[in-house]
Amino acid sequence: LEDENVEDISEGLRKVVEMVITTYGGIEATELIDFTHEEEPWEKTKINSEIKIDLIKDYFNKVYNI
Image 1 (cartoon, one colour):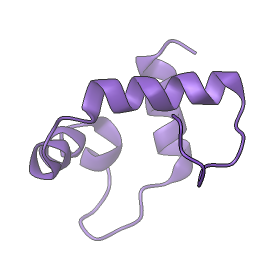
Image 2: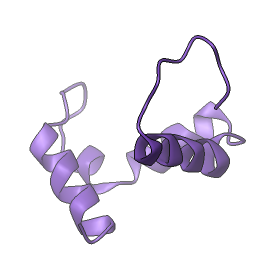
Image 3: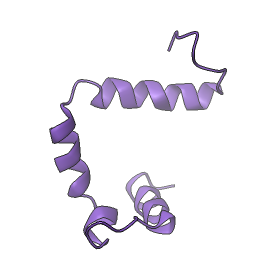
């Protein structure tokens, strides 16, 4: 992450961003859409509705054993 347009971020956040870019950076947008739409928060939300933040938090806490 060497971009003069990016403000200083914590080392932990930098690592997360780099991991996301490394893992998902080469995937086409349509594939990413399909991938995310198979996840629980999306499946539990009505079409065209906002996904509730608690649903997202619960899902990622479960997935990453936080």
